[in-house]
Image: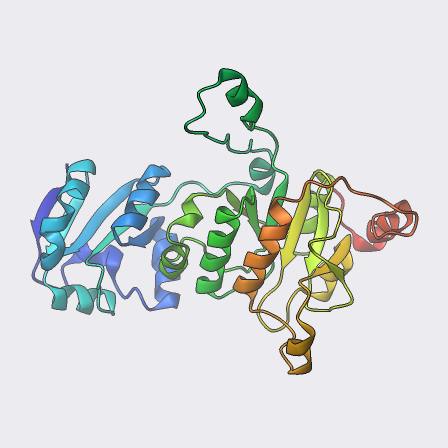
Amino acid sequence: MATIVAVRDADDPRLADFLALTDVRLRKSLESAHGLFVAEGEKVIRRAVAAGYPPRSLLISERKLASVTDLLDAYAAPAYVVPDEVAEHVTGFHVHRGVLASMARLPARDVSDVLADPRRVVVIEGIVDHANVDGRMQRAGPVRRIVVLEDIVDHGNVGGIFRCAAALGVDAVILSPRCADPLYRRAVKVSMGAVFAIPYARMTDWYCGLAELREAGFRLLALTPDQSAVPIDTVAMGERAALMLGTEGDGLSSRWRHEADEAVCIPMAPGAMAAGVDSLNVVAAAAVACYSFAGNGVPAVIARDSPDSPDSRASRDSPGSSCRM
């Protein structure tokens, strides 16, 4: 059970975990130094705890206290109850959801560890025939579909992509070194806690990071607005496939586009193209692409002149690339 502590002073050092939540630079420094992140709202807090993140403390507005008694009963952490004006002064914004939690981060996972994760088993409800249950259960197996983000620095976009990936059946998300933190408060909030529902890892090496995915057997698909690319709903994915998404505006870097096995696109309506609407924002593109990508189990068909042919693979892995696993 939480220990309820009334706090009236915005400068009370016990509230330090919640200081200046809108100051990105300060929060990056503070959260990294103390190994924490902040979850906002009851639903997100419950999802974080269910995913194994231990709460350090809670910040609750006085008006919200009566409605979160079950939350207080469940977690053994100090709960600082404050007036609305104190909460706003400390955090830098109006805490309209009325409850925040400082959560301890878990150890960061390696890319290889995430790629080796078994997929989740599907739970089927309401089937009483034992033979049907056995036949329809999805056995835990290797990660098959991943999304790879390159240099997406907007926390809201990262959170939105995680929500799309988790909702549409992607097995894991891999981040380039410069991507925004999925556990930053805005990313967690936009994802509605989906960042806790899907495994993820951050590359340590942008230049050679894709080589590890290829070594693990992933076919690399670069999502591009170029309408001459293969429509994503027709491409042969193979047993393991990685969908690469680039930052808003510039998209994927030239190196990552070159490293890809195939460029894929979301076909735009001809009328939209004529009007100058030639692409979707990265979150909308992620939603459409993940819908086609995550459920596509068509075996790869490798033609002599395909991007995945031995000659092209040798070219990508030539000594000039300097990437060896």
